[in-house]
Length: 216
Length: 216
DNA sequence: TAGATTGTTAATCGATTAACAATC
DNA sequence: TAGATTGTTAATCGATTAACAATC
Image (tube, rainbow over all chains, first blue to last red; front, side):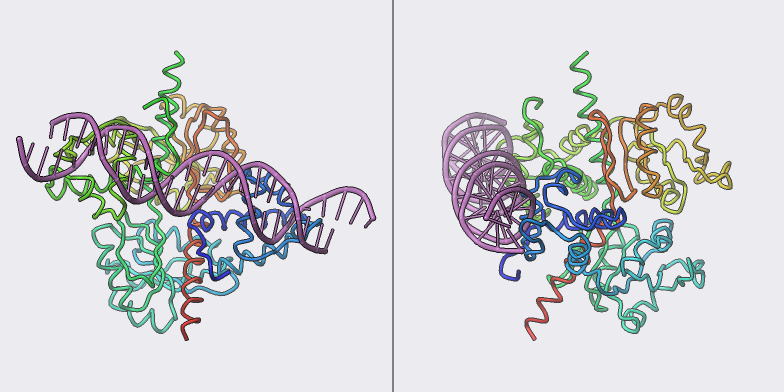
């Protein structure tokens, strides 16, 4: 479990397993084989078994996997068995939209505060979460045991803000700004580059249009 | 260019190339070698050359790549050389946040309309874009030549909505709902699963914490 | 026990990196 | 021309799939 490095490809698949297992629980399904799950998820059974066995043997020969148990184990692997305190830097439309999204809270990601540089937003609150000024950031992080900072600010300010957050002890940055952040090795970054995603969609769309032109 | 399939891994890297090239233009840099670009982007020069050569020979031996030319070619590949008409289904916080985001417009993605089922939103508008009811959807798609539909609705409604959109002729779905959509082969889907992204971050964070515990 | 299905090793496939001839 | 750097082939590396012995 600790000797071999888990590949990025596997890591990216973990939340999807967790989601499907959650849906199985909702449907009242108690056990599942890798084969049955592979049909539902449209991946190979082999891949499922390989992926899971990176973390341990959760199944039982001749039986399959106990859905609730596997769900809970996957949750532990993903760190959902404990609370993560978050802040959102940038209280514009996107920042407020994320603050309003209660599904994160259910998974243990608690949004403790919103921050902005715009003084007109000071004192306002979103779903009971106060918008504060950047000056209060350092104290707030330390006093509230904040682990994760969400960056929903313009790209030209994201680099400096990331440096500041690292200095204040933040260990994880969920980055919505359209730049690649440079942070020390012990700080993790997960990017959500919406423009990139939209361009990828556009690329795929263009491919199909070219194909269709050929057929005509 | 049309015989070999482009791998998913390459496709996902294209927007990043485009972004870096745009930044080079802003900095006034006119030519760049794969080697210099590889240093900036922290990937291998070999990968850059391989990736680009999937689409054609954009460089020149002994010279490198002309930044403006390559940027423009990458834009064409990504379909940014023409306008894409979009709608947003689900005018809650996230839908409105996306509607307010002007960077998409600059890349040719024009948000033509917002939709919702909540009658209290009817007639409201975001950045001059009207919120309409689902009943108007079919006509609107056809009359406004809509290609892309953005789904920012709850997951339990996303499947049915995707079916409806396909029926109305939508060819691309940008899916923010936390489900995997089943669509015909000629419809492309790009998922933005925010919860998955956050869980991935949480996983990476947990890994580091376990490492640090070991050192103590 | 017999049947089912895992965990795991081996084989295959694909993606990345290295090397170098082509060429500007 | 000499130097630089691409485009492209070959080598390596890693990820996925297949196969099957272990075992419930």
